[in-house]
Length: 254
Image (tube, rainbow, N blue to C red; front, side, top):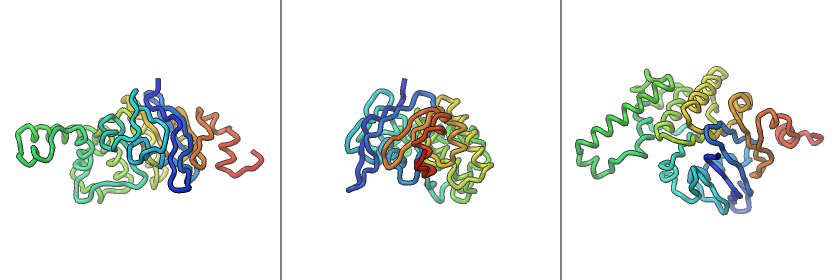
């Protein structure tokens, strides 16, 4: 059974067809990769699934309910969290505080109750911090909790952003180029983290340009070209697909 199903999804920006009649599904517990050349529509598709953009047509079904057109915070509450290609940490806040922000999508405390400083809001905040520290320990960065998040090394910032997404307690985690800017060692560590996250029961949809990482950890791969799906299969079959080879290598005879 699929956790996420995308059917007939379309999105245009003026005269540009960014996503054209795309269909794919993500099974429960899978790591599915979404790949393609620059401009293929991968980030647009992520923005559609996460509620940043509304599709022109088509459906996005998550955990049995259609979610296209919902606001990002509603999508997050439903159980979808994401990271970004370009790191978006909050400056002048510690690493643990950045991760705590992800958990607030499920918190009960609103602006008024927080201003009134009610006792239960303090209990909830302590519980959120405790959960954030558990996530940091799981990711191997517990010792960085009180460090300024934006002063950390680039690879560590990537992991903090991953922790913030996990704090949302997602059923589906959207990872937008998690290995971007990482060296070989850091990329290998990121691959291990992604597999550990999947082992906890979280389903993962991944956009990534590092083909070694993609082929090593993905159960299935969707390939986009100019906004259209050209392949959807197991990694070994994707590697041998003539159309995929043509798109990536420009081999007209493939």
